[in-house]
Length: 369
Image 1 (cartoon, rainbow, N blue to C red):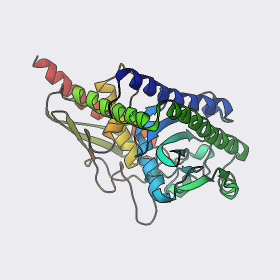
Image 2 (cartoon, one colour):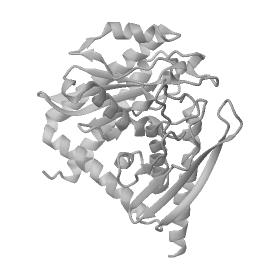
Image 3 (tube, helix red, strand yellow):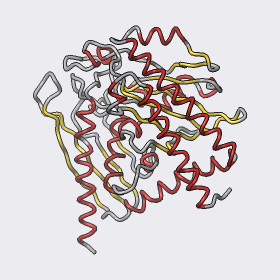
Image 4 (cartoon, rainbow, N blue to C red):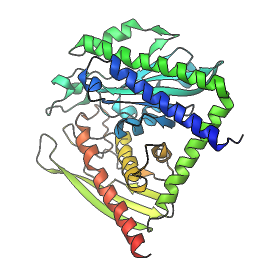
């Protein structure tokens, strides 16, 4: 079915409003100053396939752009057939599409008359998630399990009933149980509030119209991004940056990007980056891809508010990313997963070479005009 521009605009802004209200509610109900003052959390509305259709305008890029990957990890871990109305899903595993252990994701599946149509996601950086260092940071970590408790895909709520043994297990393994419990409550309360708002929207416009609006938002977002990429000069561009050591060595940790522009497509090859580091400077696959998304957004459309443009990049079109096995941008070990707590050092650094290459392509295109 086709949707007119006015209805699309109303529904899109309503979806954005839901995600923004979720974040504001979490901040007001939270215990930790990380959320109440800094707002170190992000909220999104996802469609039934797990793609972002709306995000809080003040969300963090690394939170938002990795959510589709971690939501997919949640769904795969629990099983799509096992997800039912009344559930709230939970995980913080960086290697299931996450960032680092303090970033805990809660997801509420959305149903209308028994039919699934989306998810509400709230990811927040907890003040502490256990581990050997206060705040779950330590330069001495060599394994992921030293950085805190790893929460696999689980149901925090089932049939709208809180799973108290799971809550007890999590909060017993952090340094300030009252803060953790209060923040967890703020997160899932925002999901319940957002669900009420979305059900009001579906009740007003109908499920088919809301679904079509979601599809159109994604389609237009990709179209806009591709049109900007197509303005770059096609070619292959190279750049690199480094981090000064990994906590155990002063050897440079290189982040190397080869960016290939071809029409409206960009391929980013990170396989020449340094190998997995011993310290917590590693970066999960999803976080590395989020750096690609952030760089492309900042180059192609820096003026406008955040849109699901990055979501269009998260799978394969128009910007796939390649990695080397056991690269520091995709670390993995058969026996123990690598430390990743200080990934913000990597994520904050490595968009730089990608942005540099995109800017070079843009300047080359302008020189031909």
